[in-house]
Image (cartoon, rainbow, N blue to C red; front, side):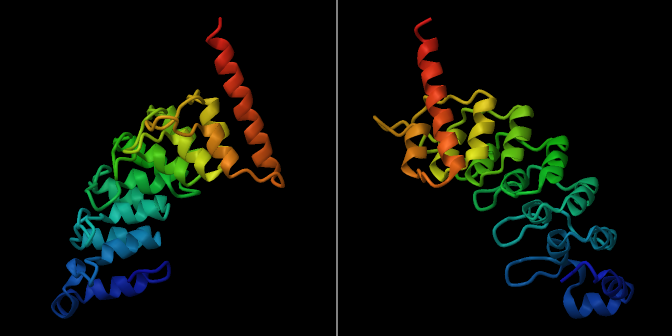
Length: 239
C-alpha cells in the first residue's frame, strides 16, 4: 500500500519485477476488496507512485469490489494530483455503476476538493450523472459544500433537478440546515417555493424551521432570508 513516503520502496519493488510479480501478482494484485496498488496510491495522494505503477502496466480502469475506479478513490479524498495523473493516462471521468458513485459525485461531496472537481469537469465528467437517482449537485447540497455547489451550477448543473423522492438540492440543503449552501443556491435562483411531490410536502422554509435553533445566529439569518425570498416570490406573482 503506497504512502506519501513510499515512493522509494515501490520503485525498488518494481525494479525487482520478476520476484515482485511472481510472489504478489505485481501491479495487478488485488486484496479482498479488489483494491489494486493503484487504488491505494490514488487514494493516498501520491502522484509519483501513481505514475510509476501506470508505467509498470497498472490498469487505470481496474474496478474494486463495488466497481469503483482508482480515479473514484482519488476524487473521494480530494487528491487533485493523483486525479490529474490518472486522467492524463486515460482514466474515464465518467466511471460509474449502480454500486459506485462517479468520480464527480465523490469530489462534489468532499470539502476542499475544488481543484479535483474542476479537473473532472474539464475532462468531460457528466454533470447530471445519477447515483441512487441523485446528481453531483444533490451530493454537494447534502454535504453542505457551497464551493462545489457554485462550481457545478456555473458549469451548467440543473439547479432544480429532483431525485427519486422529488427532492431538489435546495430541499436537501434545508433539511440538513446548511446555511451557506442555502444562500449559495438562493443566489443562483433556486426555487424557494419548491416542495416534494407529496401533497403538502415540506418547502425549504419548513424544513429549515424543523431544524431551527434560536441559539445559532446563522440558522436565524437563513430562516429570515428564506422568509424574505418566499415573500418576494409571492409578490412577483401579483405583478
